[in-house]
Structure formats: C-alpha cells, structure tokens
Image 1 (cartoon, rainbow, N blue to C red):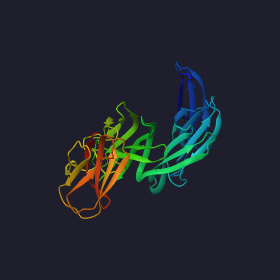
Image 2 (cartoon, rainbow, N blue to C red):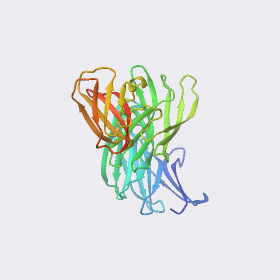
Image 3 (tube, rainbow, N blue to C red):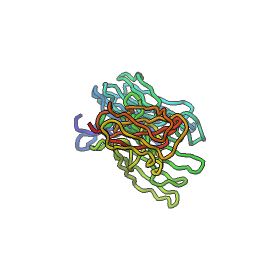
Image 4 (cartoon, rainbow, N blue to C red):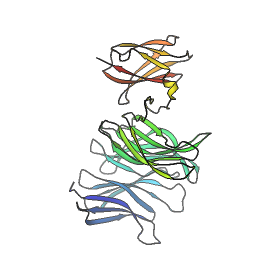
Length: 353
C-alpha cells in the first residue's frame, strides 16, 4: 500500500544450517528497508506473500524435515507491518507430502489458503492428493476446511488468484498414469471461495509417454477467460519450451470443449453426434442422438459461467426428445448428455429472449 515491494523466499545462514523462510521489504525504487527470517530446526521456505487489512503480512510457504520422506507440510506465517512474527501454523498430513500454502484475501476479510492434502504414498517421491481450501481468521483459527476435486497423483499447485467473477483459480500440474501412458498434465481448477467446484481441466502440449506439461501461473483476462504460462517438454528431445495457453471462461482452449464440473473431455467426433435445433431457440428445442442407448438418460445444462441451471431426466425411449428452455435467461448454454451417469455427448445452444 506504500508502493513498495515484498520478496519472499528462503536463505541458508551457513552451510551447516537448514533453510529459513525470508521476508524482505523494499521501497518503491527497490531500495532495501528491512528483512526478517523465520524458522527453527527444520527447513522452512517462503513462496508467496500478501499484505493484510491490518497492515501486516501473510506469508505462505512450506516446511520439511531433512532426512524424512514425505515430511512436507504447508506453512502460514502472520506478521505485523515490520515483519515481526505474530503466529505460525502448519497444515497437512504428517505422514504424506502435501504442498506449499498459496494465500489470498477472502471477500469477508479473512484469509484464504489453497494447498494439496497428501492422501496416499505411492513411492518415496510420489503420492496422491486432493486440492484443499482453507479459510483462516486474523488470529490463525481455521473457519473453513474443504477438500475439492478428485484424488490425483503428484498434483501440485503454483498459484492462487481471484477471478473476475469473485471466484478462485489455481494452476499447477498432475500426473496421468494410465495403463498406456505416464504424462504430466497442466492443470487449471476454478472454484468458489467456499470450496464449491466450478470446473477443472487438464492440458497437454506433448502427450507421449514421460512428457511433461507444467503450469506455473494463470491470470484472468478481460474477456473473462484466462491465460496460463508454464513449460512443456517432450521426452523425445528433452528440451523445455515456454508454454502459453489462452482459454475461455470455461477453461476451453479449443471449440467443442465439453463443459461442467470435473468432466472428461470428449472426442470431437462424439460431441458432433448430439444435434440441437432450432438453435438459437426462443423456448422449446429438439435434441437428437445419432444412436439409441439403453439406460438412465439425463441432460445437464450449464450456463457460460459453468453453473448448472437445469437437469432433465429423459423418460421416453427414443433418439429424439424435446427440451423446454422457457425459464432460462438469454445467453449461451452447454448441454451434457449422460447415460447411466457417464457423459456421452455435448452440445451448445443459444437462448434468445
């Protein structure tokens, strides 16, 4: 607020010591003003910091115990305006690696922290985990603690930012270890400040065995989309490339992207098999599938912000059925067609007044 700058990181005070977290304050011209170190017997790291409404600072980071596998936990340090420590909290599974603490201010004046909660040890250097969102008051008390999204292997987060519509976006990566491939995929996840999932997507530039696709940051753009930056590396040549991806408000980087919360992307040939007309529509419209399927059929409807606005059970045994959209507001909508709980096809429809 004084037009100065903060830097956080970590330092080794001697070759024999473990690292201490660092907070360094500069003026508007980058001149040194003061610094503080935080740490004890273990290795503490500062990774991001914000100014708090009381004029102090909230430093997010992590600590780990050298010599102990899976000892990394998220760390929060609250300071006054001169960097004097007021309280320090640690969060995580004591038996599984977690992730750094990413910090932001909540709309209600409290603090938000995003991290990963480690759940299961795969190997000494690998674990599964889920994204974790906490809301913490000025005294360090936890007032909300939510696990969101699916369990993934080696999921790590690198940023936490507010979106234009008051929600949150994180960027990072996760390890896709299917039977046929082992690929690190870039990750974007949008959720509310209360921990409600909005959408989650994985991205690949290289998609062969042992390729790596990492996101380090994601910024909201003026069109309500996002631009993510990171690196991509093909295992064939081993060369890292800077990687920039522009997506729309639903995280789609290509036309025909399936939408909704935690959806699986559909092949383009499948998404074209759901036919909608008239489109645009003023009220009722017809939906036709290219083939008949047996089972419980549902149409889920999401608006352009990823919020589910309708769910329609299809009772008739037919490839064609009618959808009543008279209660929808005007705008763009995304349809998901599910059979027995699995997304089969998707389509877009525009509702006019």
